[in-house]
Image (tube, rainbow, N blue to C red; front, side, top):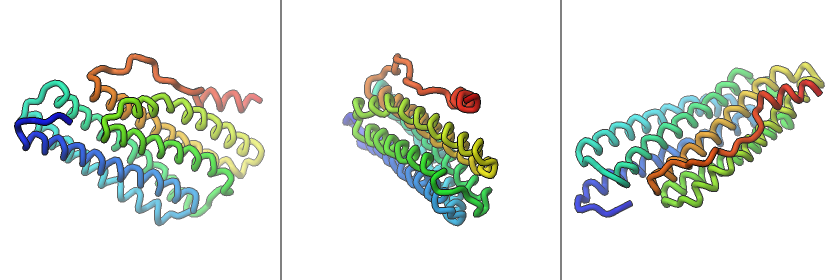
Length: 238
């Protein structure tokens, strides 16, 4: 961040960055806990995840209020304005990640202790590990203003899409082979899609970091893997 004649302005920008970092840390924990709840059949942990999402929502509101007040008081320009607008954008993406983690937790609760064999959950666990790594990396790129690191996350989204497609195909195979797996399989498909959407929000954050640093949007088309709907139709037609 640039130095200003007004130390209060510097303090405002630093506080926004701190709140975004705090939000990101909470989101990382919700991702980890929601998938752990799924893997361990832990409805108690799932309930704690759904309750904890409110903290992320509160922080987003705090960031919005702080950003609006800072713009009104300081009338920032150029990189300073991008810092504030970027914090707002990133907070919005983190809030959506929290909602997606809560959605996974709600499915754990809906299963009510009736869970599939552990092997059916491994694909979702592997996906969440990858997405969690991407989120940690992109939040670090924001804190360090590291454009190269942000772009690496942006380009890594295709790998998450490919893994999601693989998980969908595997789950569909299990459902076809044994109808008793249909209920579990559908729940897990939704969980996998939630994790894939988390990855999309991580790449959105990467785009925002790129914008903050350089003042320009990414003009390349985002690399995307095979659509999961197409993957399901292909697998079902085998």
